[in-house]
Every structure is written in C-alpha cells, then in structure tokens.
Picture (cartoon, rainbow, N blue to C red):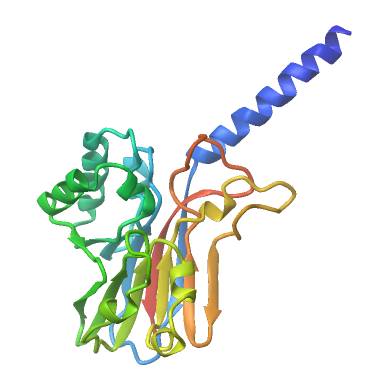
Length: 252
C-alpha cells in the first residue's frame, strides 16, 4: 500500500518538476532564411514573449554569430512584473551591440504601457507601431515593418507598409493571425513574417494544444515564422513545447 501511495505522490511531482524545467530550459534555434539576390548575409536575433522571465546572460553569450539586428516580438513583460526586470532584460539584449526593434504584445498593454514606452525609449529601442524602418545591409535596404495588432480593433497594414520600398521586407507582429486577416495585396508585399504570441500551445497533451506549434510555414510567397516564445503565461509550465530564442541567418 505504501508503494502505491508513494507512486501517486512521486509521479505527479516528477511530472510537474519536468514541466517547470522545460519552461526554464533555453533553446537557441538557428535557422537559415534563403533570400534570392541578397548581396550581404546578416544575422537577426529574434525573441518573443519574455513575460515574467529573466533573460539568461549565459544563453545570449553562447551565441557567437555577429548579430546585426535584435527584434522583440512583443510581450516583453506582463502585469505585475517589476519594471526593473524589464530594464535588465533590455540591457542584456543590448550587449549584442546591435539596434533593437520592438512591437507591442497584448500583455504589454495589460501592464503599464506608458512606463514600458518610456523605458524602451530611454534604452534606445525603436518601437514599431504600424510603421516601418529602413535598414542598410551592405548595399541593399531591408524594410522592417511593425504591425500593432493588439491595441487596434482593425489591422492597419496600410500604415505599417506606407512608403515601403526595401529590397527585402520583414513584417514584425505579435499575433500571427493579424497577418492572415490582411488583404492579399498587402500579404504579397511581405517576404517574411516574424511573430509569437501562441507559445506553441505551451502545454501539449499527446501532441495536441490550444495553438499550433511554432516554426516556419508559408502563405503564397510569404514565409511565416512563429516562435514558441521565451517565457510562459499563467503557470511556469511547458510540455511538448520549448522555451526558445532564435538566430536567423539571411543569406543567398
């Protein structure tokens, strides 16, 4: 009898500890994105859905690639997270020595957006809110567009793409569903979408979860890359998904 009771206690406890471990064990996802006629390859560091977590310095310092851009896909924080933790995370990302770009997530707006805005500006982060920014890579211009899908009831893709004329276009949006809601004429002008929000379902039972797993897919001629996120929401658990950040190498 005592063995049965012990098993009933130990097995669920071990399962919970495993899910906590998965929620805090970092994975760096390295991917190559092929771009026709790109004259100079570049590395982009992408992280999304940090939420309550502290970004691990050792994870970032293990990246040996020369990072040209740092992109944050929203939910850098959430309600109840100390603002200084967010500042500390930003400063860790600044150690790459690369410009940082940010798009708002739904949890950022549920926190204190005015304080977050002030923090990001003071730390030199470029906020993309239905606008775009041109970046010179070698002799070519890359257009980085930010679509704010969390504050507005309608997707303002026309504003995000206004006057875009880069050789290659990257759309940053927190929720990937926002891209699917846009008209096809706008979709066809985007080369790749970077998004988060879904956490890959965060907890998947026998492969099934509330959201699809993250990864790279395609719609028409547009690549869509969805991160499973660095942090977690509500409970510090993951199952069948991973805590991840990404080094994306764009090359011909």
